[in-house]
Length: 472
Image 1: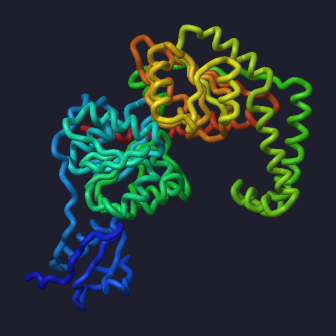
Image 2: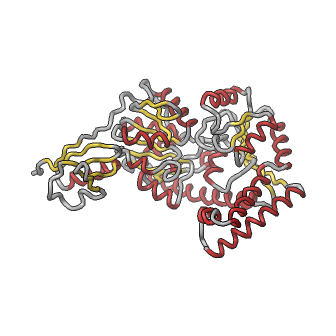
Image 3: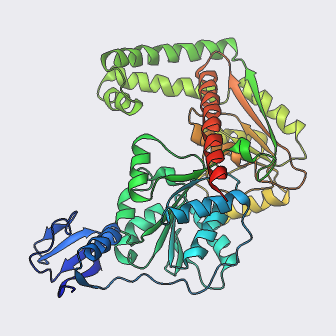
């Protein structure tokens, strides 16, 4: 026989409030709860709701549960899934609708998410890092649902059963609306714990959680993502999909040399930095780059080392050889749509001024950005240059060529960049050029990144074989 009512569960300011709690509850039921002396009630993170319900059921405790997320009023009329998208969806549903799907940029993570939303038919909150993605997601949802789509961010604040929010806006709104959604989708999920504060996810009751990324994270980020969204439950690599779901491509490295004056300047700055950094590493073996920068800011020598590091990077960003190579490549591909990636905004603007091409940066407002992208899609402005805005999520299938003027040691960022030109189109073959200065850290970064990508392909191929063998 069930016990009498032992508590009431309600949502308040991003938390669960457990009041009317009677004494004598079984040990463990109030795990993760803290006492609120003002309310004379217990509080728990909103994300604990599912676990709390299970504990109450296991202990035959009856409660008054006042939290019921909204339903989705109408299905999404999304296109059919490709084989790997269906496999990803099946793996996510089999994992109790929690976990991360890792698909290469251009492989249709958004479509897999639409299918997940359709499978559960509950109100859904989609979290994105940028205003560009906010607009892109909202437009995609509007194309596949007859109902209204909410937006939180970019000066719009409207909540609906399907709502897209920037990470920043979600942090403000979650305490008010965290009980309205049964599913949360985290786009670019590798940002959880960083750009996307994990506290946002703690303020949402949604039991179903889906993370989307092109490259699953490791270390502390993976631990946070596992705790608040779920583990990576499906992943597949670019080589496995090239020529199938992604456009076939050629990746070409163009080694370049600095002029004698540039080389002297680079070596001078690099020597100042290397001396301080090497000494720090000898004193603190295994310390991170963040540890070094924190320590460096506290001394004059450390600050000088950071200044020298930035100066060395500036020399590599856009030297004479890269200027010449970029001009030659733009002339060679005059009839193609080209994305140019730079290491920083200063280089992006320098290229835009020098070559009269369109820059896309975070400083550009939504209306102007949309106009520039439309000019690119129409062919009126066939070249875009950017440092970071084009790295994540932007849908430009018209792009054929990527020119990486300034690379990154990050495998994730590199994968996202080259993925921008891998969205398929009939008879398309993409080309990715990477300009790298010999005898510099760029060559070292390129070698490490390519080695990591090769190892990743082996790991993911093994994972894909396991999935295929388990599929009837």
